[in-house]
Length: 472
Image (cartoon, rainbow, N blue to C red; front, side, top):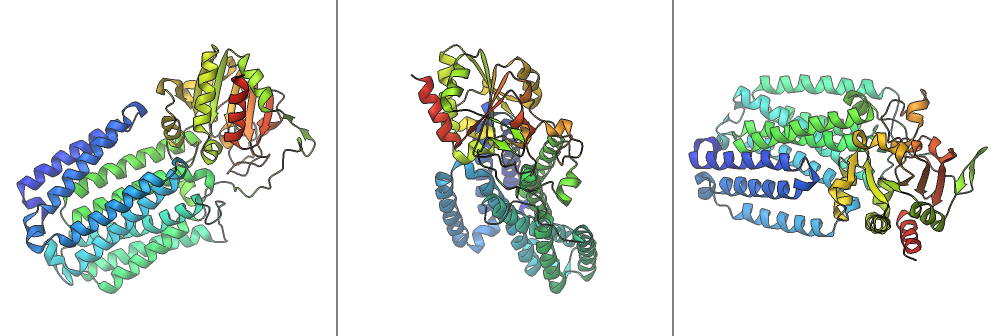
């Protein structure tokens, strides 16, 4: 079934591709993200309808396909309505896994019925089709199991800490080389069924082995990299079955995901290779309760009333949201607190670190859900020089991205990672459940600074108490 042979379908795919490009452009900024989503949805609808309208598809019957679309669409609609904003990272990981699995299934279909796609006959497939198919299969299988592991880590079905064992990197390298050798053998064989499924099994195993050593602190990069993988898998299969929509869409997703991964790694002062081969740190550090000290280091402990008094007498407050805000679903309470402060004449801004949360843009999504004005939200590069002019910084669950150890301790696993320099503010109010370290497993020096006051408790409850105190 050659989708490129019908001019009408080719034109529809071209229109869909333009809409996808405009969608990516829209998603580059919160103000235009909603429009970008709508354009992407329109492009996908056009591409799907054009595919179903193919003469060969109509002749073979579309009943089962339509049924699958209805069932899948219904499941997607229910999940989208029920999922909490805090669960978006694992939902995205789950979606990536399905894209990878779809690539594996399409590759298997093309291998078993090549004549239907015009790529040869069983056992005698076209050379270029074999190359494209094997690449799509390998990347798709790696994406599937890798995304499943990422989902399990994000959903706390398994530990978010890195899982390491002796010789791990050598094993991964060996399996990677073996995968390349098997792909060459598969192409040379003209499409061996046995080699196809060996490649699939090896790629599935490699996906697991590549993700388990990556810790929670690196999850934003993992999510963006899996996004890239899913795109390249779709593009590879698109070439195999001559589907322009898959080629263009896959290339857009693959390249944008790779660029985003680079931006994320730059934000962490890390190399992509380093992240993929090991991650850093662990979240297994023991949690020390709010006893007021860690070892011989004393900390200042405050209450919601203390925080309310300090912020109400400030002229400038910067709010730094982190994963703790997401877990507690405190974004609406934070917005309410911000509104009360602004009514009292306090200047309020939000500072976002590029790797805050568990996926790219996680904090921006949560703040947008709470209808925080976009012009009050600033990225690290835009806001870092303003912390020294702030009377108060309200840190709500952002641990590693505010840790001064990244600048002061050369032996720290996060050394060199750009941070939000909240320690330069006059007062830092740090909302946290306990003295536990962040996902990088590193004790935060900020807890013990003279200008820091710890507010122990659930982020949402603490913020709501501050709101009540401000409203008196």
